[in-house]
Image (cartoon, rainbow, N blue to C red; front, side, top):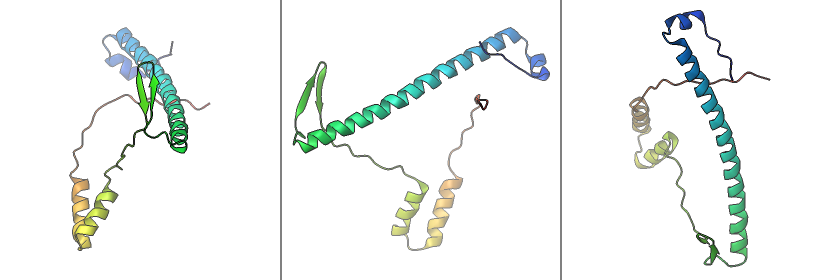
Length: 132
């Protein structure tokens, strides 16, 4: 289990201190488990991506682009997927510059979009790790 260290003013404000400590311990346990799962998921995605590239290269080199590979629960086949880049302020600015010749208007529009984005604020716990 984890040791919980709280300042005195926090302890004094808590009516049910034991329940609060248990919630913190549970949060830390869940956060630690999520970190393990996320690290494992990242490794698996990287492995899947490498295998995908190797399989696609083989199929392209051997003219198997239109072939199906039967597996226990379905088929595998090569598929071309379009991936669009993110819509960033830089992208919007470049596009507007092509449409609007007045640079000041483009700057005004970009500033307006940046200044008027919807902002939401949520409280959350942030975990920091001790340096080894």
